[in-house]
Amino acid sequence: MTSTVNSPVTPVPQKPWKHTARAWKQAGFMSSASLAGAWILVQLTGLAGVLGSYVAFAIVFPIVAFLTSLPYGKKAGQDRMATAVICLAFSSAIIPWGSILFTVFNNGRHAFYSGFLTTDMLISTGDDPLNTGGISHAIAGTLILISIASVIAIPLGIVAAIYIVETKGRFSGYVRFFTQAMSGVPSIVAGLFIYTTVVVVIFNKFNALAGGLALAILMLPTVARTTEEVLKLVPDDLRSASYAMGASQVSTVFRIVLPTVRSGIITASILGVARVAGETAPLLLTSQYFVKFTTNITSGPMAALPTYIFGNLGVGSENSVTRAWGGSAVLMSIVFVLFILA
Image (cartoon, rainbow, N blue to C red; front, side, top):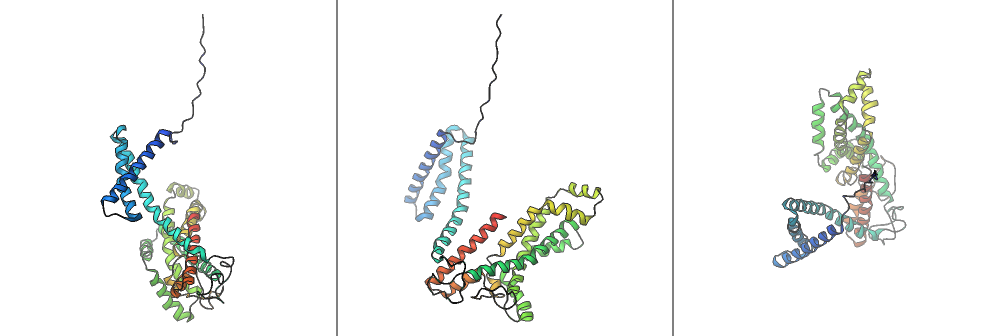
């Protein structure tokens, strides 16, 4: 009598996301055929230049993707065509951003030298050589103005969102309406309002505090609306459990709800800062521009990166325009970091 022993079979881990050599060959053939078809389309039509070639490729690529996948069935062809359209849509959104970033940093790199970020323009003008002067006063001014706006807008935005979502008071509908309406206020209108009420009436001079107030008006709707949406994500069961334990509404909001969405509130605040970091029009009417590094928010005008860029572009010389590109590169870097943190 014989007995058989079945040895256990160890399953081999699969990697369905890994492309095979056959898939790479098919993708290469599809891309080559699309490029050839786009070239033919350019020759037969009035399309020209880089943009015309891209438009021709965008027309041909989904068609080629569908035709090359038909041997595997109509469903496979439709799936590959949809994939091609999605890839084209993604590239169409990324290419302009890449072009902007490349243009700004390529034109602005000539303005950078060892003292560009650490000196001001007190003894230099926009026409001077690029190895003199800098933007330390504009960077400091931008940070001060954003800090003033944040101190005002972030608490008010959070309180407004709490009133709308948690308190649901009698005027919550009006608060939501005015918050939405404020998000559509043109930035120059906010600057003009602060100019007539703060600059002219109270201080009788341009200053950083007025600039921060103007930015706070623009920042408040972003913080309030984003925080409102974040608070709506908190499950009602969490609130009910807190009430069942005998906690008051105030304790529930500040000890349960807000800590739960802490990361979302931080994101709302950062998005609000990024929203106003590049505003120019309200600052021209409130904080104006000053060539010296200063931290006094009420003594007089204060520089910021947007007004530094605007002022150098107004000079119009080759060196001043290069300085404006350099300031734009620094400003975009700050905004880019803020969006990454958000």
